[in-house]
Image (tube, rainbow, N blue to C red; front, side):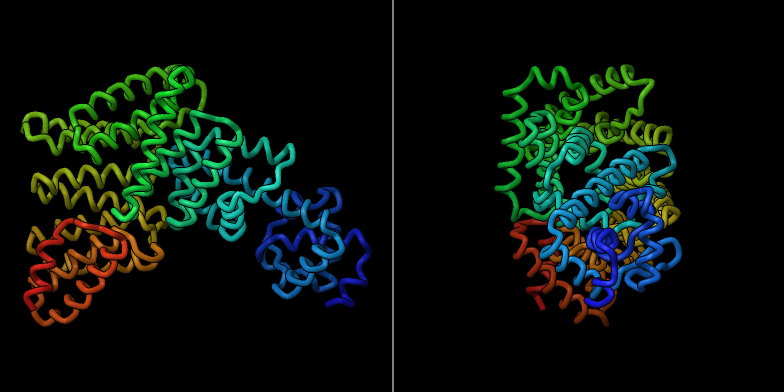
Length: 466
């Protein structure tokens, strides 16, 4: 390896060192971003002839041993070349993340955005880790890109959320928060705090203090800088939608929540009118869905019936704006949840199937966000006394959770709780399996610090009485 490297002229040595920043595979376009575009094809041809890189299909590959050696030489002999390669690598893939995120919000292009991410997953995840670890070296080009990523965090973050594991997404948000503070972008800092607050709630009640600190920071920063939000209508909409959800889910103040959500809708519609000639991406359906949740849980039956109107508006908005999209699937799931809640099980079944059909057509078979759909779809079948299908759905959801969610998570607690209770009630020969699953659930709940979750008491009764 040393002999082969030393046979190269210095320009090819520099090229190999630059290319060593790729974790594994890279395209010609990516190589051109790191090397001089004029000479790139010539460099790749010569390195291939020297057996230092290989070509597989439309991609190039550098063997891990060669990559390790080239990086080591770069660190010792050509540190500036290696640093330049790392810088251009980040710039290239940050640009791709921005392009992909824009495609994610297009009509019927959601699946394509996921496909593009999967094609470059190794390199894109490496870029996200650098952002999350706050290790980006800034030059003019990367500084401008990072400003674009922070400025477009409303569009970028939801896309990344559905592409990577929870932990990587959390770290990415922390990196964005750090950048927003360096850039002194108050409105973006508030948006990212809201996103971090929402994520912290997903992991269970063990993060309660963290959640409280995050939403407290967001509220105080927003209220101390109202003129900034008066100027940035979309940031105000984003904040109000999250604040409304906080009032409903964390403080049980649904009437007040509706007031803030209605204000968010009003501002959102005004902003949409201003941006008719531009790609207005804000998901109004998210606000309408939360208004539907508030109405669904209202004690007044008349107001409760308004829920289906809100869910229908959210679904129609997403169908018209995004077409076949992850968000459209979520709207079908929310509609199904409403019908499950009022026990119109046929309609619930129909809408769960529509939600899953969109995801399957998008080739998102192992999407972690499918776990809550499987949980509620399994409950639907259980209520219809179709215990065989219910068990299949719960087991499928459990499998997806195990394959896509690293470590403990409250979604795993939920779906395993329902599976264990179903086995206990309807499958006497599976009592031992039910007990094993129950033990796993209680251990996970304890480690997460979860004090309560749906059907916990029923599971405790079964587990303690055996």
